[in-house]
Image 1 (cartoon, rainbow, N blue to C red):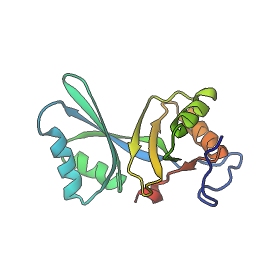
Image 2: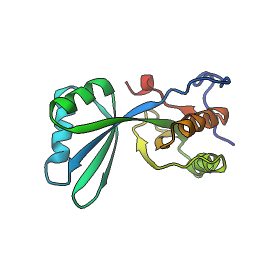
Image 3: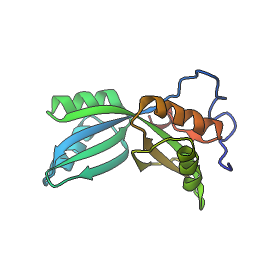
Image 4: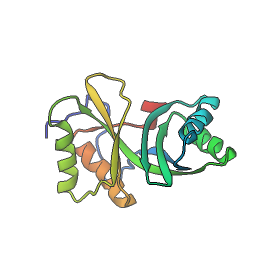
Length: 163
């Protein structure tokens, strides 16, 4: 595995160590004009930055998945504005901006029995890296995925990194 973290970016993995996940807010909305604007407006009025966004849709409804700078206040603002929203733990990590880097990480997880339900990118702070968010439905496998990545030298993104 050629993906290595910068020294000191992730502490060495110890048995039983808790992997710090990012929190993703999933907002359920009707699939009609103006709904995405209303979601972004709620965050704008609350002075909360969007760090990543993914939209999945069907004919009648959509799910807007967000990583934001202040999850607690965003969830409160969505509830106050009558949006249905839930919080999910996700893993986020950086990879070098080079050919094959994503493949190496995805293969590593697959070889270890980790099923990624969905993935999307995250705004990075460094032009030489890409930020990736993955969701693993099973909480035990989610933690295991984080441990596998750290052991392989992949740098996990923490809430402090996106605040």
